[in-house]
Amino acid sequence: MIIETNILSEISLKASSLSERLNQLSSCFILSSNETEIINQRLEHWCQIIGDGDWRKLKKRLEWDNLTLEEIKPFLENGKISTEFSLPPWTEILTLWVETTAKFNLKRVTEQFPSFPIDPNNPLPFEEIWFSAVIVARKKLCERLAIPTISFEQIPFTLLSARAYQNLERMLLQRLVNMGGKTLYHEFCQFRPPIYNGLNFFLEQFDLLTQLDLTPPETTYYQAFVKNFLQDGLLTLWKNYPVLARLMVTTLNFWVEATAEFILRLKDDRSTVPQLQGKIKEIQGSLSDFHNRGRSVFILTLESGQKIIYKPKNIGLEVAYNQLLTWCNQQQFPLPFKTIDHCDSDTYGWVLDYIEQEPCADAAAAQRFYQRGECYFACCMSWEVMTVIMRI
Image (cartoon, rainbow, N blue to C red; front, side):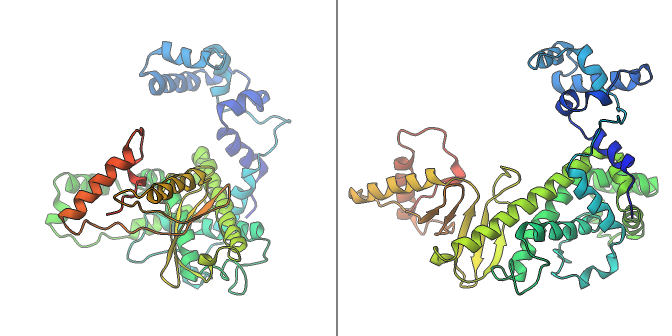
């Protein structure tokens, strides 16, 4: 399937941010009387979001960037492609995504290698629509790792079990589902007969779905909906929701970047960190807020059963804090503190001790817990309660 350049240009132009329109795409936005109505609608919507309808708040926000309402009006229209317009880099992945989706055979998904990150017992809403994104992500990951294709003979499978790699792809699929779920549900409600929407709402309002012990609903409309979207490679979806297209491509690209980085770091550090020897059996991700282009903390379970934490950020503060606890223990504090081994690699780090959360065994243990808690918090402010470990 070949996508016309003008269609890609239209999608990317509509997905452009205000700053991009002001600084890079000004020739595409010339105030036209034909779009006065849509400009006013967007201004009113923007004002409602920023200032609850108070125009003074919107004007004040614009003043922070030395802008006025009159200056930004042309940049709120749909825009027209000019001769100076060039496609942004993210449309290259979007093109590959559309082409891959158009020839993707949903019925042969189980024949793919590696196995797709699906769980029959826990299906994700509209996950079939995003399966082709996994194939695109694999292709881009191979490019990042400088390998021709994914196979058992080379990375990542020399470092990760098939299950661990599947965990990584499941994280990507989950993020895409979360990002596109509301849009697809809205489209699905428009696609299926209206009576289904009203019936489901009625049953949910009165909690009758559970009380009536209804059998699983017919999936005929759902399957037809998925097939309808996939047949043109999701191009209709991207044309109707260009900002979503850009967000989804960005999410996919961030996953490729962060995953390749993790795999290469694991490969490089195995020789110097004995705890990283052996294959990673399982990976648990999405344990922290996504930061720095979609990176997040991983808990790695080795074949031996040992658990190690990978943190894609500087862990110098944690290392220094553990050094403080070690010093406290050397001063013969009445209650010793739990310390943790780290491997600090400046821009990232490995936490080599995984502490399982356990309840206090008895009243004496609970008393020691709170006594240590007072020591932890002495003369300190602004603590993250979820990151404090207290030994009992």
